[in-house]
Amino acid sequence: MHPISRREALKAAAAAAVAASGLVPSRGRAAAAPRAPIEKGAQLRLLRWKRYVQGDEDLWMASTAKFTQRTGVKVQVESIVGEELRAKGAMVASVGAGPDIVVGSPEMPHQYSDKCVDLTDVANDLGQKYGGWYDVCQRSCILDGRWIAMSIAVVSFCVVYRQSMVKAAGFDEIPRDLDGFLRLCQALKARGTPVGLPLGNGLGDHSWCQWLLWSHGASLVDESDRVAIDSKETVAALEYAKALYATFVPGTLSWLDPSNNKAFLAGEISLTWNPISIYYVAKTSTDPALKAMAVDIQHAHLPLGPVGRPMELHGLLTGFVFKHTRYPNAAREYLRFMLEREQYEAWQQASLGYMCQTLRAYESNPIWTSDPKITPFRDGPRLTQYSAYPGKVGPASAALAADLIIPQMFAEAASGRATIKDAIARAEQRAKRYYK
Image 1 (cartoon, rainbow, N blue to C red):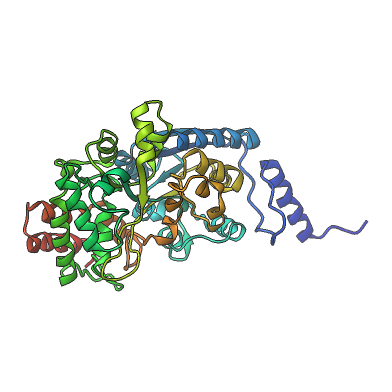
Image 2 (cartoon, rainbow, N blue to C red):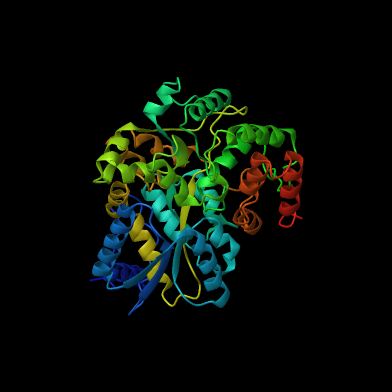
């Protein structure tokens, strides 16, 4: 036997700590940095958004129970609707007490980044193991060189439409150009099967407004974070929005995220912009009318605008840990565990692809080829821009996004509540409160 060096002793201690946690390093790759041991007696409280598809919540809770079984760490989960999640997250950050972990919008951790635990080691380890993170994930979660949050899932959106109604309007599929898309929507309205795109103050379904702005080559700020909304490209985008709004069913100005789902499933609209939750409800329903609707539902990506490339904005869920937690190591390992293949692919399958991957390896999940109606959602993570595009992600962009400046500008201009010139001027004034 040879004497044990201090270095060997440290390595052995680290290995023992990992083994004690119930989480073992993966094989067949470079060894990750040693993990800090999970704190003795650790318990966690998690605040997350309330599910839109039942399979999401069911599998999340099942994986949480598995984590508890393997590590002994109890995790209390509270789910609330997205509109309330931001407010409660801000309150927790302000008082420095409450949930240890939050799973919510990408803006949240940037609004109180100094209160977030550094997750860089976990993010780097998972990225190395699973083919790397998509660009949107890195841009949205890294601040000043450190991961202040983890990308949990991309919530992909598509044009959701009734194939029979689109064909009755004279189109075989969703046009790939803006002029054709407008003609389709006008034809649908003329046949008494109007369109419905949300223009209310929801959490994410108004992201089609960002697509329309960016696809014309306009943006709220430029690469230097200079407010740049007052442009001829913005005017063109708002003029198009006004023509498109004329094809909408009444009431879209007050729609929150569940509203277009309800309108579509009730047969009030023929086309909208939404994640896969509409199809999920129809496909899994026992109602014969909804089962028949599921057969008629199709999905497509939004048309290309003058810039000539996809400029969509999809949702992103991030998980972050507050520094007030007594158990930061347990919190890190919980997030790591939920993103490992065994849990993650089952979660995607249970949600029917509602939860799209943030790590590239999961593009190969069999869920994406199990049903051709699901496949378009797979591509959201690589097609999406980040919400601050083309500016820098940070506290200013987070506050700006939370203030809903872009969707409210579109709502004012499209509905005629303000002239296009006045709507742009108001958006510019509001944006300059965040960008001096």
